[in-house]
Image (tube, rainbow, N blue to C red; front, top):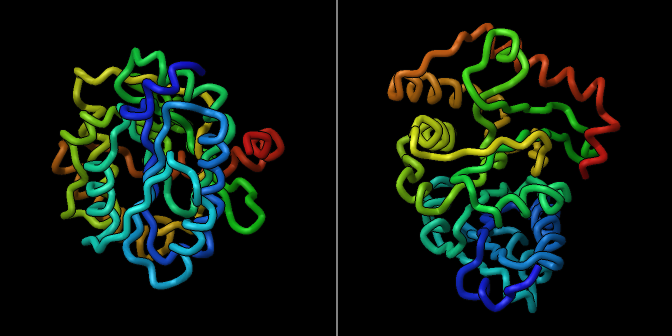
Amino acid sequence: MSNSNKYKSRPKLTIITICKNSEKTISDAVKSVLDILNIAEGIEYIIQDGKSRDDTNQIIKELTKDNNKVKIYRETDKGIYDAMNKALDKAKGEFILFLNSDDILLNNFLKKSYVDIFKSDFDCLIAPVMFFKRPSKRILRYWLVKEGNLNFISSLIYSPYPPHPGFICKRKILSKYKFNLKYNIASDYLQMNSILKDSSVKRKYLERPIVAMAMNGESNRIRSIIKSKKEINQINKKIKFSENIALRYIRNLIQHIIPLIKQKKLMDFY
């Protein structure tokens, strides 16, 4: 893509990774972004490290040395959402994608999403997300999304919102709806629902995933799941949103069944 000088001062997209003591997974996340940076223009990569005490910082430095598209910041924070807000303030891209330190940016991102971003006829891009288990990277869950008011049958398969790694949004909108530090696990859920309830926000839905999300991430641990559901219930009351709990669990089950049927096809997205 041309106009390389144009994007040096103002990139089209900023990818942000928040990490702390992530030495076991950070290399996969960083390498997946570097694969894109090496062949695409108009992207900057911000890594916000919460002063890791393990080898995370050394791994990052070694992988990203001599790459001027990568910016590394090390500072204390009040938790992951505070770190996200800090990184958001530093970003220069028109669009933002948050990629967890144990997630993988898929090659499919470059084939479709990257091109769509440069068309810029939308404010946010919403994509399905694959969930995988380490170390095999086998797909265990496929979170599908679809636009519009879903009927009962569609709601058994599709969700109107994705996990946050499947959400690319304009920086100015994210800055308006920053992460609320009151919530430790589900603040991204509040942010996305607040944005999607805003009728002025133009959105575009993709049919294919751009990110593979680790099942053993922070929000997928048992204690975290329990706390997350509590926070989500609080948020739903706050935004006056109600969802059939039975329907949500059936959809969750179906999302786990899909990879059993289409494992080979989903693995091709890597």
